[in-house]
Amino acid sequence: MESTDTASVLTGGCHCGRLRYEARGTAFHPTICHCVDCRRIAGSPCVAWFSVERNGFRVVAGEMRLYASSTRAERGFCGYCGTPLTFQAHDLPDEIDITTASLDEPERVPPLDHTRVARRLSWMRFADGLPAYPGSREEGLARKGPGGQG
Ligand SMILES: [Zn+2]
Ligand SMILES: [Zn+2]
Image (cartoon, rainbow, N blue to C red; front, side, top):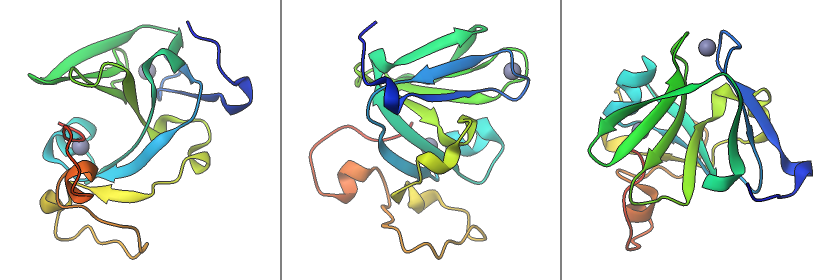
């Protein structure tokens, strides 16, 4: 486990409290994802995420269960209460996405954009002034790269 700046450690966990995690290092790509997979898995119109380097994430209590939500990604959740916690794309092995709302202090990592808004529910409207990308952030920025959530 790589040691990183402890001042920037983020802590969080599931609803029942059995699963706890720490995320160290710089949080990046905080977003609100509107994709159908996130919607179904969370039972929520959209899901806020942020990313850290994979080796900065550690489960410190409980055991995370993994679910292959597609051929290209696995999602981690509490096997007891079901809280969605992580997203790991196989083609991005060095980073992990974490559900912002599972943080103890979600206000520390506010979203900076919306992604997959092509799938946004019509009644889910925002006036936060943030950039909104029809697909992934990378596509939105016209850069080459893999997608965001999946
Ligand atoms: Zn739980
Ligand atoms: Zn998504």
